[in-house]
Amino acid sequence: MGAWERLTKDPLSNDQTCHGIKGDLEFVTHKGATHRRRQYELSHRARIWFYVRDGSVLLIDVRTHHPNATK
Image (cartoon, rainbow, N blue to C red; front, top):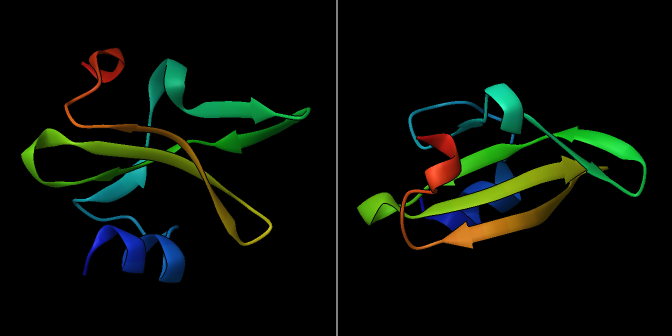
């Protein structure tokens, strides 16, 4: 299953490639509401950061490498 299929069908399940971010980056605030930040891991260490609001996936950041913030 690719990123598009996973994020549109089952973005909140946890496994090796899709899971919540922990620590200081665990939450994101948007328009006064706080949401749990999640990460989808692609091949070659690329990452998609997102959160889910009212059934919609909102992308925060897409990186072609492992983000330094989570090291």
